[in-house]
Image (cartoon, rainbow, N blue to C red; front, side):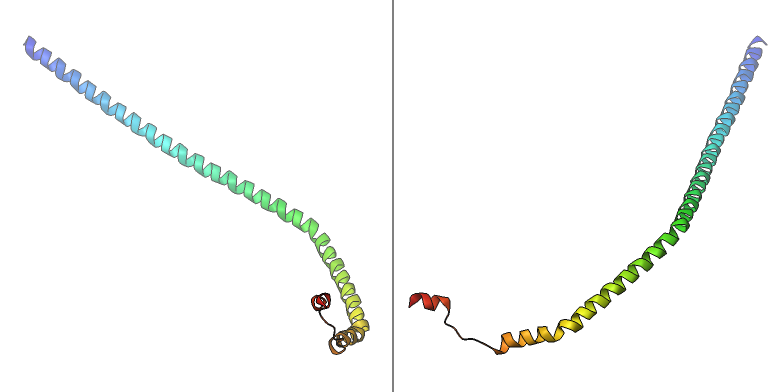
Length: 124
């Protein structure tokens, strides 16, 4: 009977150890799930913060762009006026001098004055 009692105690001790091992496995599994959930939460929180920061910077840029839009359009208008004035000046200069330039070009092309080349003159 003593042997049976020791065997029963050992069996009960092994059973207790197995139950403790199962409990430990459950705790480890819960810890893993908790860690995975915390990582997911951290990622979603980081993405939310990134989106908020991006939106605030976009709003800031739009405000800056809106405040400087008038300056850009007025500068464009001034450049257009200056360009128009330059074009008028260049066109007037062209119209004024085109006859004289054509005459000078024709004189140079038509009125050829034949001369000996300088190398031939040096040999004589």
